[in-house]
Length: 223
Image 1: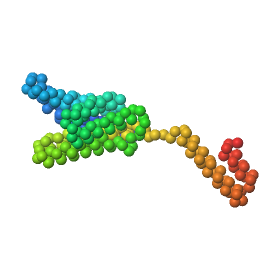
Image 2: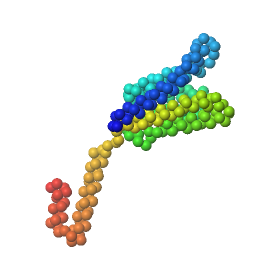
Image 3: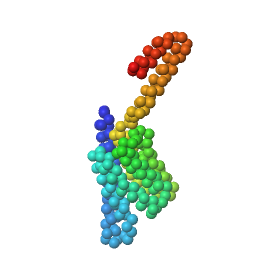
């Protein structure tokens, strides 16, 4: 399987995971918004969650299309939602959710600019999602909220897989850095200098004559 096909599969799996997470959260989000609109619930705290659910659908679509710029645009509202969660409920879990989203956005931006091959950092968003999930699930278990543990477990697994395969997709679409012409020129100069030193040592030891040394030097210099 070539790189193009692999990247397409990675993007598709990530999109399915993001969309599945959004589908799971969509019904309760809609119900919450309806409660707010008809006055049954005075708090507007559920509106951002409903907005975040819609954004996940958009993010899934951009991944299917494999458009890094569109993915970056879709991730920005996710960062805003994470900031909202941190401001309204600052905790370790929300902090790592925000870090995961921010790192992913930075990786997408790097893939657009082509400044990084992402070979060593592609897994970081998934890692931070895993940390956030463990922190929140541990809190649920500690406070004996087993119903919430099972309720959110599938969401956390889907988000972990989504960021994992999205990271693989970014890694596969960014070509590795090529050596710049200046680096190649410098390497060639170092090799030539080393050969000159070798010929000079042979001359000093009497293994070659002065004429042979000069001939080798002209050959390397292209004279």
